[in-house]
Length: 180
Image: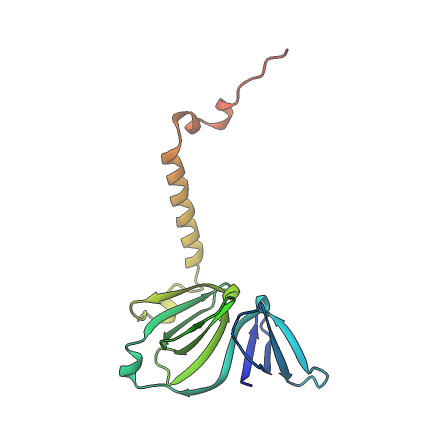
């Protein structure tokens, strides 16, 4: 049974052992290890889990080996982003995936198990973003700027599709009803 560290959406962390992790079911069964002596086993819904760290980290392969791997950015629903080189042969199940990854500049290979419900997307990227974290736009209002831009583009597109009648102000389009 592999030892795992389970991270939940609310920030709680649970150390456990699981008999098998295949993501074929929407729940995982675990033997709980922790400070609460009364807990023994648990059924954990994947919708409550952000990610699972499986086993212990291993030394990363040589840089020339990982350079041939795909680079990816895991974008989570909660806004977290994990960038990593992905070892070929990821295990993708019905409800989640298991990836062996090496974060950029790290010397450890880790195994991440992530339920799909915790992910927005996993993007394959061409190269690492070399800008400092503070300049990448993460967490400094760029999301709001992006939302504003997308809404403006959508509004402009709708205006282009509108008929001349639809472009007139709403009150001028409302007809007066005649009494019977």
